[in-house]
Image (tube, rainbow, N blue to C red; front, side, top):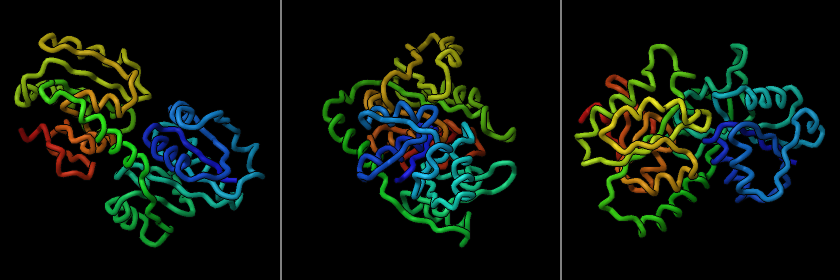
Length: 282
């Protein structure tokens, strides 16, 4: 039996697509946004308790994240019980930090990545401490197919902008930029993009819509704050996509949208695409 552990939305999208494409006997340990994501893709999904399932497990595959310690605790317990555990990374930053708990680095038996850049970063970060494997990213493949179909229906004359919010203040060090600074940069440079009328701010799965009510003070634009649609549908409905450092910017590149990062001057976007333009350079 293979255990599947997931919490954060980004990792859950990646891991759930792997599960759907690789038929096997799975047992699920899901929390947070991962519950909703997996339930949409797997019929009659049953979520189990990890500690009560230890004797059933041959292996565990976990996503990683920052919002909770659930996934790293499962990795830690797998190591204690000598159950093989693999961690599937869904980003290109903070690799070591994903495996630190109580100031200790707890590495799985294998780290999975889905592209050459992530493989190089992981090799550099972990040296020869751990086996690193490249696994196909089925979520990006699904996204590309979705956008290829949707793009045929889009009116290219629309001037709609999607801003992808991130809870930066919750997990960034003090030296980093703030969410408000990024959004202010976005608003200040809107005039340099196009004649913009409609802007949708999409809060992160962990954020409430109310958190961004302050952006409504910019009366020049038709602003709404919404996260009802899934991320692929939301991207497909807009012409321009802006964000700081979220993986969803890469999805927007796959959708062939005009993509911008709102990180302030002196900071860098880690999403691996030359098609992402820096607002601070306009």
